Image (tube, rainbow, N blue to C red):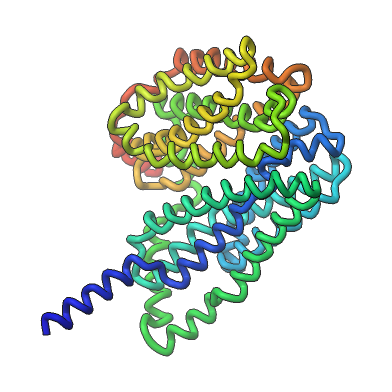
Length: 440
């Protein structure tokens, strides 16, 4: 009797460690979106089609603005058509955008392809996590969301590193081959989603034959929605109350500037590597694979850094360190390559540290509304920085990096003087109370 119990316990333990079929499908979907074969060559490809770096900066800014404009409408549509179908649309639009890039020979054509890809990205941004949660909820495994999501992220980074190596080699064979590989991976994801994943109606029909009933599932979903629902006016009030706190408001501005400068600098890895450092474009895949692996390794240490260094100390030191590195490139251009690796590592750790600090200092009421607003504010900061960097890069790439460093030093100092971005704030209960008072 005890042996059979032990055997059953061992089998259950093994089953808990092995991912279920729906989770394996989710992993494959994430991989289909992560195999970006064009990442190490897309700026070089733009230049081969006659685009200037200033136009490249405008394209990146357009992508950011398009994401901002389409985020909420596509999220609503994904809910209406089903999250699985929304993710399939995301991959289909991504593949269409890849074909558009390959066929484009003018700035307006590239602009259209950028918008198509941006709309596809917004279909995926919110629906993927929601879909994963639904898959796990169907197996009563919601508690596994963080672990499964983390494994998917790690798989995606590994896929990016491998695709970067393949993509640069493919570009040496044909300038169109990386785009074809991008489109093929995305379309494979569409086939996987439509063929291997049952629709919501099919799952409901299957559940009616046994297990959790449709009515029980509907009641559970309704309860979940009710627990997190806010009216538009309530969400606006909570968001305004949270971001009206001087310390939190200035922290959001301070970190948005830092992350925006780093993001803009990293856009120019390819032209700096090729034009300034003389790296063969065929070797850019190895550079991007290294950058991706460094990001993964750095991100894995975020919790340790928070415990040992602390969030406030981190953001007192790291932006200044990054600014000095960007300024140093003007004197020693060879520093650009190690600087890019450093910036990727700093971005990989700084974003979750900043998000954790913001989460700690806002209440549970309207958390998603506040965080969505913070994400939009960051995007708003990135767009003009991309345009500025692209315009400056036309004259001299090292000077552009140095200008970003100077902007980070001066702008960060101004934000610090304007507010108290790194001061400890009171707990968030007072924010919820203030929001409630405002509604009354």
